[in-house]
Length: 464
Image 1: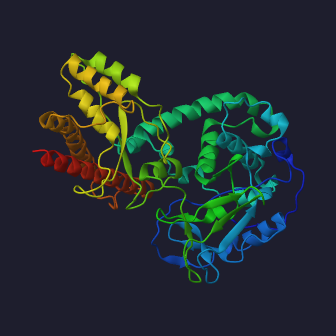
Image 2: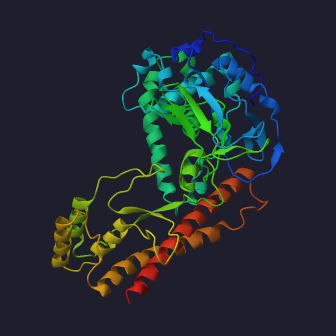
Image 3: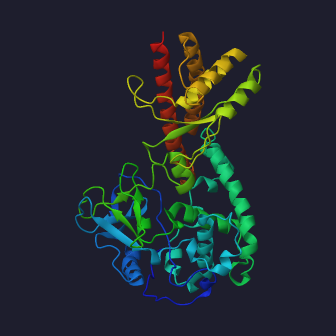
């Protein structure tokens, strides 16, 4: 793991084919993050010299308040002394981070504009992996999870993916794997220009490096960057602490969002991510995730005589897709539902766009549809956002949604039941872990669906 950090000074190596020699570095943590765990060992003997090595590399102090330790799920950072809210707990210079800027012009010229920043950084990592112990970053590369230790859903087998078929993360996984295959074919000609290092790069090598970067890199003005030491910080969905970039001082830093006692695990928030995103991009889930959401798809029945007209109207009035905090896009027939906190009183309830879709669905004549279009033109241009004047028709529209959600709830319940006891001793450890993560995922999305269902029932009852 993180042994043999040593005192290696900057030196020229084969890695210079891809990087400027003053800007090369590494990694992030094992993302099997759960907030409340017992510390197994306050100090990690294997990487006790990691921070001193990094500070020699950076030429400045990175942190005087943190040390690397172990918890039940891997490495983490702990308070070396009391930390007060507002303290800067680490500061990592850009000079010891890896971004796409580290690619030499010769290498960059071989990659077209469609190659994203994550892929470019993955190429950087591939070079270091292939250099083995000749790499000045060998101590870092050796601590990264091996291919068999990655738990992002892009590494799941077909039977494992079947466990999450109810969730939209299933389709997102299929899409991401297909895109990665296209990306690999796009960059392969460039890799082949350096046969003495990269001639034996396989798709498995690439997808492994890509997943390591995807789960460890932080966003910046340069695209994404791998930030040493900060990558040991684990995730807490309710934390307000994040990695901040100071473009004037050229450093990344983390400010404590609360007080920590000495030897307490220090946590930050990677983002306001649902379990679906955590599972797809990072390979872990939380038992209870306040940011969970469900992507619901609902179509116009093919037997609907007004189907083509409704489709035309919906597409005409649909606003351009915008990515949410989890990076998921919606289309005219898909909607993101978040937890409805209360079935009564104030609250956003079910998304207005989904309710509008239901109102279009229940129209039974061209005149009904024309009235909705006219109303949109006379107001803000959005279709069917106002309740029907007829209470019975408004109830009918929302009962369509209620029926759809009820069916989804039944399917989710069946999926959860089929998983059985995730702690069964008769299955392998990795499959047991992935089944447990599936339960976290499905349970969270089921909670969202039930909250929306309760809101719809209450709304319909209020119109009677």
